[in-house]
Image (cartoon, rainbow, N blue to C red):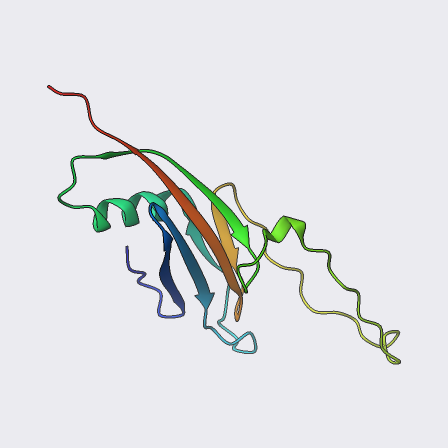
Length: 129
């Protein structure tokens, strides 16, 4: 589950039974010439984490649901209303690069980006053979 990319880091925090918070960070400096976006497949991460954490369990993973949340984990990211800052020199600012788009279940982490997700696992007992 670890990354071979030195700039990609994740931390996992338990929230409640069968629910975790995962924080993904791209530590690359956006001003480095070789800094680029890194991708994390959320489905693969969720499955790998579940089976690594439950090696001796009698349960299989039935379903996993994930939601991107704010950095303070107090609301889903889709519910946040972005504030548009205004400054006296707005006309001279050309803006930065556009964020790298996500690709299906693979999320993009641009250099110096931080994104958090809650994962809620539903497990089931495997059928007896």
